[in-house]
Each structure stands twice: as structure tokens, then as C-alpha cells.
Amino acid sequence: MHLPSTEPRRSIYYKYRVYPAHVPSSPNETDAKRVVIVGGGPVGLTAALDLARYGVPCVLLESEQQVSEGSRAIVFTRRSMEILQQVGVADRISERGLPWRNGNSFYRGERVFRMEAPHDPDDRFYPMINLQQQYLEEYLVDAAMANPLIEVRWGNRVVQVEQAKDRVYLQVDTPEGPYQLEADWVVAADGARSPIRTAMNLQMEGASYEGRFVIADIRIDLDLPTERLAFFDPVWNPGNTVLMHREPGNIWRIDYQLPADETPEEALAPESLKARINAQLAMIGVENREWEMDWCSVYSARALTLPDYIHGRVIFTGDAAHMLPIFGVRGANTGWQDCHDLIWKLAFQVRGWAGDKLLPSYSAERVNAAREIIDEASKSTRFMTPPTHGFRLLRDATLSLSLKHEFVRPLFHWRTSRPHEYGDSLLNCRGDDNALFRRGPADGAQLANVHLGEQGFLFDHLGASFYLMYFTEGDAIPADILAEVNTVRARGIPFRIVAIRRNGSGEMPGADLVFGDADGRFWAKYGISTGGGAYLVRPDQHVCARWVTLAADRLNAAIRTALGN
Amino acid sequence: MKTLSVHDLEQVYDALALAMDQATPSKSELFLVKLALLAAHEIGDARRFQSLAESALQDL
Image (tube, rainbow over all chains, first blue to last red; front, side, top):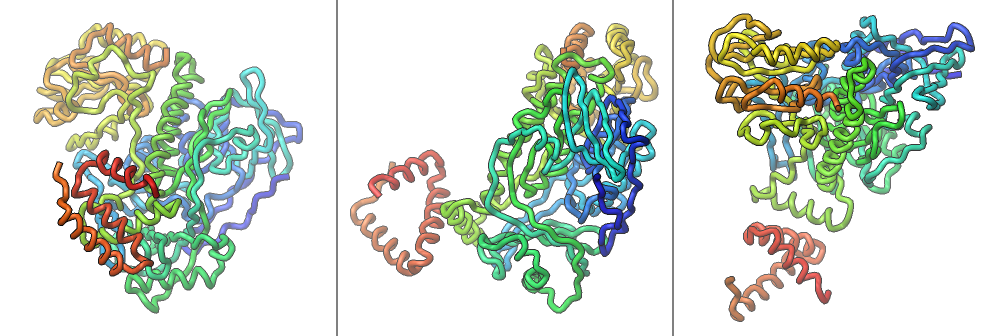
């Protein structure tokens, strides 16, 4: 019997709601579904909402009956917000969240490096926004529970997974005992400790680092802007690193490394936490100010990934597929990119639109992304938690030099989560004009957002569909191109044509959406100089082909490739 | 490539010895790493620096 707590979790700022558990109607209940998503965290919930956009229903199993304990993931990137905009929760996050773009590094009381993340007028969202994970999950839960295609089953824990003949058989335990659930596909979004990954005995590759960190959330009134603060080698914690982030509601995240010989239990003892937090506050000049603890935890830095995310009919995504160091906000932000890459492919598979190579390309694209992240993160981690005597010496020498020498300061800037480019993807067209472009997103790269004036931003208009972005000086989409698109649409595949017209405005025969570009800014950003150029864009907003001059037969070949044929 | 005269080398020899003493034994390692980073920045050639590091590793 699985009995999750029905007591609301304790928090000084967040009011937890306990959702009723789903229980089987009879002990022998067997239920058959097309897609089951396991895990109701940020990634599982987003996956369910994303899937529903393609008309694919799912059941989502969450073992607890309330949202996450503590603030956990608190920094969300622009790319994450663009994905969350697609599933309809970005506005609520923007309403409560705190956007920011600056990071500061301090050593011996001096600010030795200040990072300013670029913020282009063409971007709707800030480089980063801070919000506690409970709120984020609440917004996703509200959207999922209001969606007729999603059935959220609270208090349901998967205890067994078996696969046979293109089916997955799950044994699910509930507060009133177990039941069986069959599925065509299972999406495992069950987190870093993924019980499904463990049950299937899958091994991850990569490294664990020695450093362990305490995360503590306190409520305190501090007159500081929303920026990342990193303190290296502070007097009260010599040789280690301390991070501070503002969260909404006067909550501050303090994050510090433990001395090597200390256990997590010792580190989380109230007197130890109190002394260290007071020492950190004293260091930034705050003394005798009241503060209250909300939540604390210990984590260790790991950089591990499964070498393959698809195992039969079980597909891993987010932390269940990889564990990444949180320096550089790589947890949830990587997870959303995973699920956004996966879901359109899974939906196309379920709807019968996918070629054989479409779904496997999820694993290829995202395992590559995870390996890039592991490589980048290991550079950050080597600085934050030096693994050897040599790395520690170099870190200390860099800190010491940074007080007077500019050239070492960029070493403080740890790389943050970014959108990954799928330049090697099998879905990219090979016979297109990609190499002839001097500007604009290349094949495999994420589409670039564009501010359209009164029409908002380009991404505001995008949805669960392929897009042909057609740059034209004419008055209509050419008939042979339209005919080609219509043969794709005849199969039911969502496919829209966006015209970006250099002259004139208003509707255009054949185009589903029209943007006027009188000043040529949109054209220039996409590297287009003459009419007839085009971009083919996947439903996850990554480019898969582009042409200086599009012709119908070239479009046909690119669409076939993009569908995984 | 410019090289040091014996006279200049002797100057470097003395300056380094005195600086090491000034850094004190507990900080001499840190001092040397700082010096190496500053020298690498002046040399402006990562491959050249790596080959110098390999030379220094010999016959330890």
C-alpha cells in the first residue's frame, strides 16, 4: 500500500494544497492507455500539456498528493519561458517571477567580475527569471487538470515495469492498493532518483564530484537587486563558494559548500545553519536582522547521463535521463528542452505521421546536448569545487590575481544553460542552402524570436505545428508550394505557412499568418535578401531546412527528412 | 626568439629566490602559480606554455 502524506507540507510562504488520490475501482482493475507519463514535476507536467496540443491524451502518475517540497529549481531561462509559453503558463510565471540578467562574483569583499547576459529587443523574455518551484508546478497542475486530454492521478506510485510485444505493463500502487496499467508508451519523468530507471537497471555514464552544498531558503528583508551573487573563499567558509539568489516574497536562497569532512546531518543541524547564515549575512553587512528559515537541503554535484533515452517503449526525459550540476541552472532548464524535443516526435509517432527515424532522433539530439552540458559544466564545477590540489591552487591563484588583473576575470563566468543546436540531426535537410546563409538560425538551431511591433513577438504566434516561413515580395504563396504543403496537411499533419512580406500588408492567399516587414528587419535577421527564400521549422521551433530560393520539389525532400523518413 | 643573457638570468634567479622567501613557504606554491599565469598571459601562446610545463615536469 502506497500512503503518501496527506498533511500539507510546511512552508512560511507557500500554502500547499493536498489533491485527492486516484484509487482503482476494483483490486483487479486493468486500464489501457496510449501514453502514460510518470512523474508530476515540472518536466512531466509540461510533457503532458505539450502532448495534449497534438490531440494526444495521456495519464500522468504522481506518487505524492501535493507539489514539490521547498523551492528547489528557482531560476528559469529564456528558452524555458519560450517552451512554457507554448504550453500556456508563461504569463502566470512572469506575473510573480523576478526577471534578471546580471551575475556578480566577489572575492575578499571586492566585486571582481560582473556578468551581463544579453537581452535583445527581439526577445520577449529576460535571460533569467526566479520563481519557487511550488508556484511553477501549481501553474502547470492547474493547466493540466483543466485540460480534458490529461488525467492527473495523484498518489499513484509505479512499483513495477515490464515490456512485451510493444506494450508496457505498469503496476501502480495507491492508498487503496495496487492496480495494473497498460500503455503503448511510457514517458519516465520521475526525477533524478528515477524508480523506473532503477527498476530497469540502467546505468548512467559520467562523473560525480566531491563537493556537497547546502541550499537554504530564508525570509529576510534585504535591499539588494535580483542578481546572482557568488562569493568565493569567504572568511567564514575558507576555500569554498557561497551563492545567493533573490526569490519572490522576500525569500533568499543561500547556497554554500560544506567543508569536506562534514556529513549532511551535521550541516543541516539548526545551530550550524544559523551560525553560517548569520556569518554570510554579516559578510554582506547585514547584522542583527530578523530572518526565518523556510526549507533546507543538501545536494552534491553530479554530471551523469544515460547513453540512450529510449528503451523499448519507455522513454526517459529530464533528471530521470541525466543528472547535471545545478551551477548554471541546468536541471529543469535542460529537462524542458528534452521534453519539448521529445513530445512532438512522440505525438507524431502515436498519430501515425512519423517515419522510422523520427522518435530515435530524440535520443540522438538530447544525449548529445547532455554530453555538451556535462563538458561545459565540468569546467564550471572545476572552479566551484576544485577536485584536486592542482585545480584548487589554480582557482586560488585566479582569485588572487583577479583583484588587480582583468584577464583572469572571465574565468569566473560559469556557462549557463543555453538552447542546444542540433546541427548533426538526421532531421536536417542535406540538399538545402544552409551553407549559403550568412545570418539567421542555421539548420538544427532554435528559431530566433522577432519583435513584430503591434503583433507582439514571432513566438507568440507559434503553436504545435510545422511552419514554413516564406519571405516574399509577391502577393500570394506560389501554387506549387501550396500544393506541396496541402499534400502534407491531407495526412492530418499540422503545417502552417507564415508569409513575411517585404512590401504590402494584410492577408495573402495561401498564407496562414502574414507579417509585414517594411523596414526589412525580419528579413535581415534571417539572412534573406531576395524574395522566395524560406525556412522550414519543426514544431519544437528548431530549423530543419532553409533556402535562398525555395522550389516545391526541394520542400518535399526536406519535409520527408524532417518527418524521419 | 629572444633569450636571456647570463647576466639577466642571474637577475631572474635572485629575484625569484627573494620573492619565494617573501611569499613565505606556506604561500610559495600559490605565488608560483600566480607567476605562471601572469607569464602565460605575457607569452600569449597556450601551446608554447604547455611545452614549457612539460619541460619543467622532466627530471623532478
